[in-house]
Image 1 (cartoon, one colour):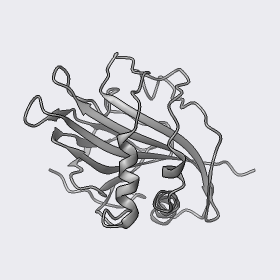
Image 2 (tube, rainbow, N blue to C red):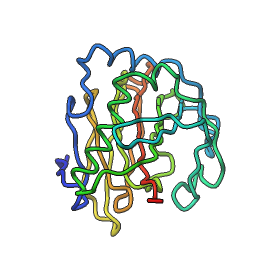
Image 3 (cartoon, rainbow, N blue to C red):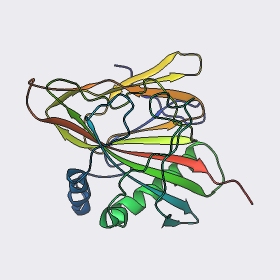
Image 4 (spheres, one colour):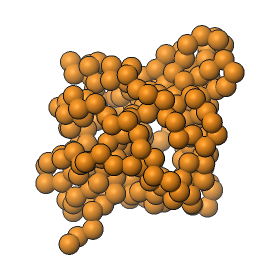
Length: 233
């Protein structure tokens, strides 16, 4: 397994060990993690899969503030997501108590500050889209964290944060540059581990999630945050 480097300006992937952004030992961590236990199926899967559960919300972050925006559809062009792109997908909203939790609010602000610091950017405003994912391994089908394959999300930056899981193998993330050279293969294995990626320069994908042993309940929970810079007025 390659070891993540860590200079966003290169623009290689930045690996964040548990505690860098979110610490599983915090009293509010478990309450936040429990919000993954109440998620509906993603009914927008172009492959007909029933292995993904999902909630979504959008925020504006800047000047030390984090404001939740009105609920909206999630949209990606088909150039970025050939499986599910090209349509407005309305997902169930992230629960208000989860979105308003101090841990989550701090996570949004701290990630924005980390991007600015490591990419040598002046403070700015960001539209942040937050996605709660639960990928379930099923007896007849493994769970696919990225069923669209290697891809960009069509934003500026992407954070992939492992929240937890149960009884699964797989889930290794591969990151490559625009020429297709693989920069990283890494399996997030501990809650609180994360990868931060420059989405304009890098493509990423994650291998299928399977139950170990086969036939037992298995799932992988992640929080994915995408950051798009708000243009200056």
